[in-house]
Structure formats: structure tokens, C-alpha cells
Image (tube, rainbow, N blue to C red; front, side, top):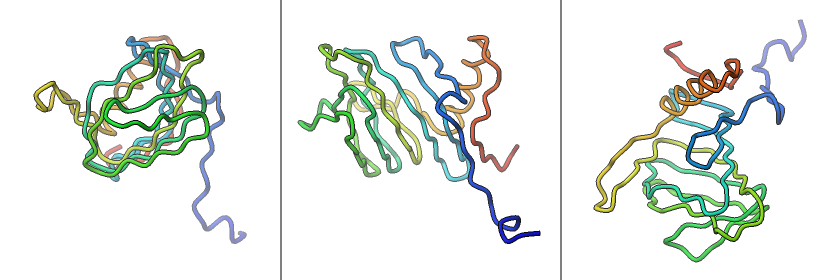
Length: 159
């Protein structure tokens, strides 16, 4: 037995190991990692020009890295472009928009801690999106789209 046999192993997923699923709203989702106990969900999303995400509040921190295209929050002037990094503190509220004049798909990696609270125009919570819901939705969409169950990096103390 070597020293490396006694330590946790790094887990790898290649770019094509996990499928993108169509969410039916003009976006594609690839779920990379879910840790139910920590409330962490790591996703890669592809948005078409003109796409808009409902206004939402984050209960935890979010880290975002843009691979291609551009996007912004309606509430702020900053525009995220390829190579941009964005940190969102817990409690932030915003509305993600992709400019309609984008000439390419906007591809973004998000590491999300906690939940997204989707808000209506009056600030009332309409939907809570957390690690468990993302996991269940992703697996159900894979099945519905005829894809085998993907080998997402998953940590769930209940199974």
C-alpha cells in the first residue's frame, strides 16, 4: 500500500462525460457536482441570446465564470464576457439577462451554495431551487430526453 492509497481521490469528469439537458425555456443545463449536505450545486449553463432568468435571491454565495458570450444583471451596469469572474454574496438579488444581440451562446459555469429563491414582482418567493431539486430535475430531464443516468459527482448522506 502506498501513501496515495490512504487519501481521498480527486474526481474528474470530462467535458463530454455529462450531458446538457434542454430545460425547455431556451437554456441548457449540465450538472457537474451536487453536495446535498453542504447545499452545493455546480452547473454549467448555456443561454441563447435574449434569455432572461427570473429575479431571484441567493441564500448562499455564488461563484460564476463566463466561458463565452455575454450576460449581466438588470440591476447592475457590469457586463460579464468570456473570461469574466463574478462573486455573488449571500443575500444578493438580481435578474440575469443575456443581450438579444449576442452573436453566440452564452456559456457560464456557476458554483452555488444554498438556494435560489425565485421572486415575483412583489418580492414574494414563488419557487425554491436548491441542490436536491437541481439533482432531481436534472436526472428526470436526462431520462425524459432518452439519456442514460449521468455520473454526476454526488454527495448525499441519505443515499
